Structure formats: C-alpha cells, structure tokens
Image (cartoon, rainbow, N blue to C red; front, side, top):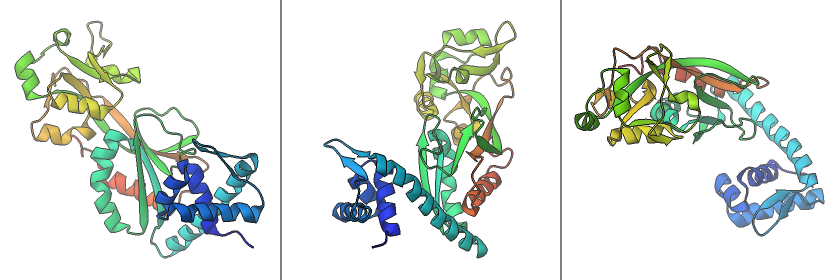
Length: 300
C-alpha cells in the first residue's frame, strides 16, 4: 500500500508541534484520527518513526532519516502547487512570517487585511518573538529584522528605515521635569533593554562626544514592554518610530530633547535563506510591505 500525503503531513506536523494533540489541532483533525494516520504510516513502513514516552515524542534513527525525505516530498508538492498558482498570477500557499513582537504588532498586523484582500489564496502563519529565530529550524519563509544583520547565510532585502527617538509620557514629565541636556538624564528614570546592549546606546552625545550608552533603571528584553512602561509614566525610553507613531500623534508619548537627538535610523530588512528559491507568495508579501512602508511612513 502506498504512502499518502496526508500521512506525511501528519508525521511532520507531530514532529514540528511536539505532540499528537498539537498536531491534530494544527491539521484541524481529531487526536484519534491523527494518531491512526501516524500508526498507519508506521505500519506501511514496517518501522517505528516516533518513540512515545510519558512526557514527549522522540524521533527514532529511522524516523529522523525518513523526516528528511518526507519534508522534501511535501516541499516539492508545495512548490508544484505554487508554480501552478503563479502561472495563473495568483500567489497561493502557506507563508510563514517571523518578526519581533513590536514589529509584528505595529507594522505587520495592521496591514494583514490589505494583503489578504489583494492575495486571498496566501495563508499567513505569523510568529513573533524577542530573539533571533533559526529560520530553517522553524521552517520560516521570511523574517523581518531590525538593525544590523550578522547571519551571512541569510539574503536580505531592504524594506525601509525607522528613526530612534527619546520619549516619555506627559504625566512622567509633569512629575519628574523635562530634561534639556544630556547631563539632566542622570536625575531621571531610564528604561532600556536587557539585551543586546547595543540597544542601550541612545542617539545622543556624551560629554566626550561619543554615543551615549545608558544604564537602565528598568530593563526588559521586549521593546513593547518598554513602550507600555513609558505609557504608564515609568520613565524615559528610546524606541523606534515604527512602534510609537500613533502614540506621538495622539500625545500619549512626547519626544524628549529633540534638538540634541541625532538622526539615527534603524534598518529594516526582509531576510530569507540564500539557497531559497523565492516563491511568488514570498515575493508578493515583501513587495507589499515595501510599498506600505514608504519613506516617512513612521515619522509623522
């Protein structure tokens, strides 16, 4: 009896999600149905692919070897479907997008409706995090990165830039006063990042003329957390325009020391692996984001 695509999809879904229950939810199937499909595949292959323990599922040696072939088959089928859709000029298929939480919330999510209206056959799968994700491990098609790129295995396509500004809530400034000079910051509550340390380099000059590196009184790994702290009146923060535009327009956050602030802009890149043949669904998403993020989009 021949192996089916449904069986391959069930197997890879169990591996990717870590459990039969999660795989069933991902595939929109019942747990019992997914379990039977996996069992049927193992029966056809006459081997055990996954070792079941009380806590988790682990690939056997045979399972690991078969997973490589299964992924290749599914990718080939997906590519064939994509090519046919491209011939009809209708990008289609699942598109896995990764971005830091602030960029996902403030840039990508507000533009999803417009993208889906233009490309209804593309199925978006959005993942956000605070660290750098391994695109291959997470099977990510395209990721958006803010700032300098370090991974030479990635191909980058510039999407835009976003300026850094010092910001605080009107309530905080009314309580603590408005700093006019760099030296005044010593008397204020500063909000910064736990990592990387480069994000605690603010667009100001210290007394020696060097870029100012601050030591935060409250630190977080998440730019969105720091934004919320600033909105709550907990101190002064340095954030990128892409996540604070609405706050500044509506007066929830006010720029601090605008005259002393240097014009420092973070680069925004769409990245994917160099050995990836860009499917039309990836290209159309990157093109859409570039059009949506025209120069000056975040500055007003």
